[in-house]
Image (cartoon, rainbow, N blue to C red; front, side):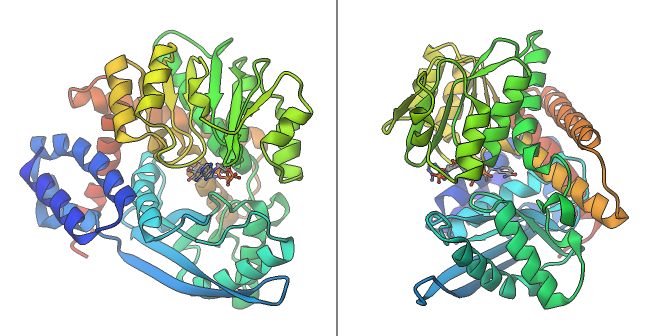
Length: 445
Ligand code: NDP
């Protein structure tokens, strides 16, 4: 590794103790870009790497709200504005009990590079709270969102920082958040948040974008080997926004998705997932994975283990970070899996990624494969700025082109740096070059 990169990594470990996921994300990116710095050491001039790993701004705030029993609850809110060299900070909000500064920093750091890969003018940021929406009433979720936005509103804006959804933040939460922003500012500023409902500034195909984008990416990986998705068995984890639409698009392409999961367990449906039933349970009823098997005799629910034990051609981890470990990767390799494309952010552990490489499994990191969500969010911002509304077909068409461009640029960059077929190296270097060019051009800050 280039000595400057080594020093930066040591500093990151020293200055960010107790933040394992953040360190993991930085190690992965810096290990790749070391190749670029070896070729052109001026890329690291003016402490660029040290600036890159330090957020421009970190906001931490108290979120007091009243639950249905009249008790005041106190959560923590976060917004990490990581890098704005390419545009306003852009990245989702995550509401989950596991959220802390470490998680938001790892997600914000990844977001810089993901957003750069889309080719659009968006910087990187992320936010959220340790609030858990599961089991809360709509009133409680609304109270929480209003309290959260009451503080966040002063930090965001359509030209400053544009949040969106993530785990635990879907259209319901975006509605409450946008409503409170509008109430506080007395402005119809639709470009301040993305993932909105279609009648109030949202974009067609935003809901589908991340999951569809992952499958477009996997299709391009297969095409590159002269293959396609038709008849391929796909294992998927998660059953939220990303997983549902990855399953839907895989079905549309003639593949056979056979699993999904949530935090209570996972479902194996050897006949192929019934997407309408899954949507009904997850999107309408807000039910659990196990509810599916009650209405689908071909399916089995497993409270233990993970979907990666099921033989498949393609694995799409779409739930959460570090959900696919070394053992899972070995199992996938033994079962003949040929492609792993990440729908979630950093779902594969570093050890799993080594196994993929050793076993010849093609591996697409989340920052490339799941960039479709933020790409369509950026298209939503464009429509808001122009007061325009594009059709579903127009947005989906643009999404497919963006995913193909990312796929091609990853491969080209990997080849250029002597690592053909290495999507991790290709994605990290390609994104880094775009961000570092902008940072150098704009001077030290
Ligand atoms: P959702 O909240 O819609 O769904 C998350 C799914 O993952 C649920 O099935 C949930 O189960 C499961 N899950 C979450 N945390 C855990 C956990 N700790 N252990 C086990 N299962 C878990 O989120 P999304 O689908 O939006 O996001 C999924 C992943 O994709 C995340 O990594 C997110 O950062 C990433 N992503 C999302 C984008 C988007 O546009 N939404 C864009 C790019 C990346 P349960 O309901 O039981 O908690």
